[in-house]
Structures are given as C-alpha cells and as structure tokens.
Image 1 (cartoon, protein in one colour):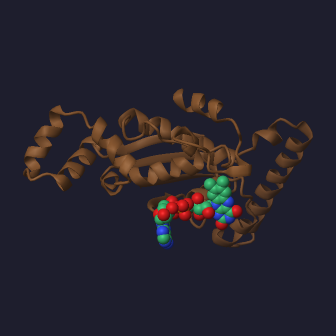
Image 2: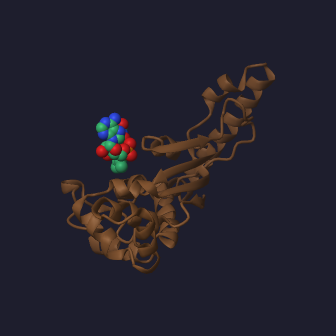
Image 3: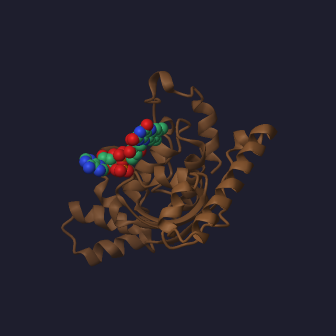
Length: 228
Ligand SMILES: Cc1cc2nc3c(=O)[nH]c(=O)nc-3n(C[C@H](O)[C@H](O)[C@H](O)COP(=O)(O)OP(=O)(O)OC[C@H]3O[C@@H](n4cnc5c(N)ncnc54)[C@H](O)[C@@H]3O)c2cc1C
C-alpha cells in the first residue's frame, strides 16, 4: 500500500485561524492575516474544536494519492460523501494482469493462501479470455474479485478528515481502510499538527462510544496514535 499526501492548502492552520478570527473581529481581513503571522493558532483551534465551530476547518484542503489498495477498501472510502474522488477506471484500463491484495489472515494460513492465489489466477485467465472473445472491458470486469488493486486520488477538507479519522482509525474499522486512514493521518499531522493533534478514534478524546462492541484497549490505542 502506498499513501501520499500530494497537495494541501499552503498554510492550513493559518487559513483556519484567519477564517475563525474574522467571525469575531472588527479588524479588516488583512490585519487579521498580519496577526496570524505572529500569533500561534493553537488556542483558537482548540477552542473551535471544543465549541464545535468546525465550519472554518473546511477552508483547509488535503489531497492524497492511494495506490496498491483493494476495491474492498475504495468501496468503503467513497461512502464518505464530503470528498472528491478520481479512481482508475475498469471500463478503460485493461486488468488482465491485475495485482491483488491478500488479507494478512489469509497470508498467514498456507492452505487458504494457496486457494486464494489459485482463484486470482483463474480470474485473470477468465478475464483475458473474455477480452479475447471480444467482450468489452466494462463487461469483462464483472468477474474481477474485490481484492483487485486500484489507485484513487481523494481530496477532503480538514473537517471531513477529522470525521473520517474518527470512524476509520477506530479498531472497529476493517483492517485495510484503517491502515489507509492511519497513514493519511500521519501525513496530515506533519503539515497541520495542531489541526490534527487529537485526530483518530473517539477514545483518544473521551470514552469509547461503541458500548458492547468496544475493543476495550483505550490505553493501547492512545500509545498507537501518539507514535504516529
Ligand atoms: C465500522 C464501520 C462499519 C460500517 N458498516 C456498514 C454497513 O454494514 N453497511 C453500510 O451500508 N455502511 C456501513 N458503514 C459505512 C457508514 O454507515 C457510513 O456510510 C460511512 O462511514 C460514511 O460516514 P458518514 O455517513 O458519517 O459520513 P460522510 O459521508 O463522511 O459525511 C460526513 C458527515 O456529513 C453529514 N452528512 C453527509 N451527507 C449527509 C446527508 N445526505 N444528510 C445529512 N447529513 C449528511 C453527516 O453528519 C455525516 O456524518 C460502516 C462504517 C464503519 C466505520
């Protein structure tokens, strides 16, 4: 899996600071911008999060490139609606030599891995046969497994990212999208450490909301995310 932060709003925390200060100040925007050059946004950003004034976070945008992930994962990813996506098309791109993702649990079990690989090989052969028979890629793809690797570019603003990290960094999330989310968070933190300082599953910020489904490992999770 490769996850890279391709682009982002040049100074994500400054734009949030300026947008928030503007709401409560009589100063001209230029003066607020000037103020933002020497004042730390830390206290203001923390207050905004606490009060739920999150719309100002929408001014900061982040674009990630995700490669070597399965269609299982992109199907979950695109359920997040406040985002923009561009994904490699199975209508236009020939998938006869497709790569695929092997879940770690299957990887660890030799018998299961062998069956999995045989099935993938069979799917490759069938797909190629369909193309040979003149079937369009858009129809031949119906026999492709969900494990097939794909590439996708996703853009989210900081508000949606905080929401996405809450759901998808949780131990209740499926392993592959959780790994994607953790890598996205790690890279977002490097360019906006205050915006994302407490980002991740809800148990980093308070009690776990999962009730009987809680993993019960809040301390472990805290350590995991402190190390990101
Ligand atoms: C552990 C886990 C298990 C899951 N299991 C299933 C499952 O079994 N079946 C299934 O179908 N899905 C499942 N999902 C997907 C889940 O239901 C959501 O579709 C997905 O997480 C997107 O989140 P979202 O809808 O909160 O937010 P996003 O689409 O990311 O939107 C962000 C927020 O914007 C607001 N918003 C967005 N669109 C609207 C709207 N139309 N109206 C009002 N408010 C809106 C909401 O406040 C929303 O929380 C699962 C997700 C997780 C994390």
